[in-house]
Every structure is written in C-alpha cells, then in structure tokens.
Length: 96
Image 1 (spheres, rainbow, N blue to C red):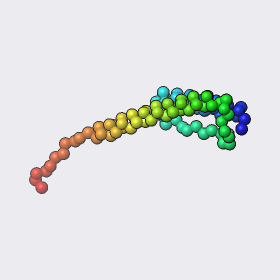
Image 2 (cartoon, rainbow, N blue to C red):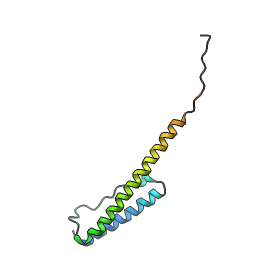
Image 3 (tube, one colour):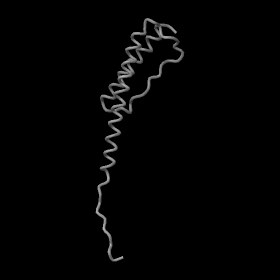
Image 4 (cartoon, rainbow, N blue to C red):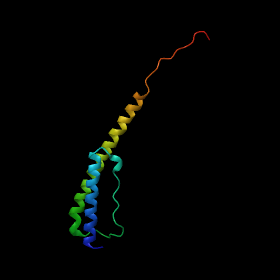
C-alpha cells in the first residue's frame, strides 16, 4: 500500500485516540473501543515510523488510564454491594 494510505490510516488512528480520551475524560469508558485499521495495509513505510511510534505510545498510555478507571469503578461497585443491603433486626419467637 502507499504512503498516502498509511498516512490516512494513522490520521484515523489519531482521531480515534482523541475520541477515546474524550470519552474517558467524560467518565464514559464504555464508549472506548478498539481501533480497526484498514485491511491489507502492508508494511509501514519507514518515513511514517516515528508518527506510528508516537501514536502507539499514546494508545498504550490511554489503555493504562482506561484500565485504572475500570479498576476504580470495579472497586466502587464492590463497595456499594457490601453497603447495599442494610442489616435488619431479626426476631426469634420463643413460644414455638
């Protein structure tokens, strides 16, 4: 594939990362999805390797932030489940 095709794919990946960061910032981690590159791209042209490397680093940082957010949400949910059912007094009928 051509350098122009790869450049367009990297542009789409950059836009996708921006949308994912926005979703995470808005507290909507469920909107985060995997990026699906075009099929049949072939090898990355050497001229685009620096940009691809930077986008990969951004994606890895976003993935780490997303994992932290989801872990925090899981811990909050676990805490809510423990507090969800207040204890109620139970009475024993001694006349049985």
